[in-house]
Image (cartoon, rainbow, N blue to C red; front, side):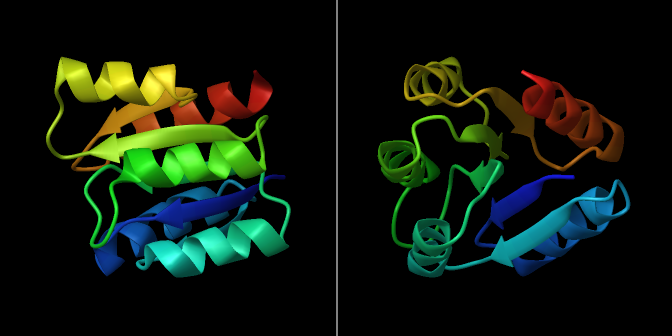
Length: 119
C-alpha cells in the first residue's frame, strides 16, 4: 500500500486521517508542523501528501509547491475548511490532484485517495 504524509495544523484532523487510511492498509505519517513534514518528505519516499490549506507558518499551497519541486510526480490532496474557487484553482494549477472539504468525510477521503493513487 501507499506511504502517505498528512499535514494539518489540527492534531485531531491528522489522527483522523491516519486512522481512516491505516484501516485501508496505508502507512500514514502525520504532522502538525510544516518544517517537520517537509523534512520528512526530503528524507523518505512518499506516494501521497494530504495537506491542509490553512497551516501555522506557511500555507498548504506553499508546502504543495515545495513538495512538488522536490518530487514532481508526488500525488497531492488538499484539505480546506474554507473552500473557494480561487484556492481550488491555485492548488490544481500547482499540481494538486484532488480537493477535500472539511470536516473530513471518511468515504470521500477513502475514494479520493484510491482514485489519486491509481492515476
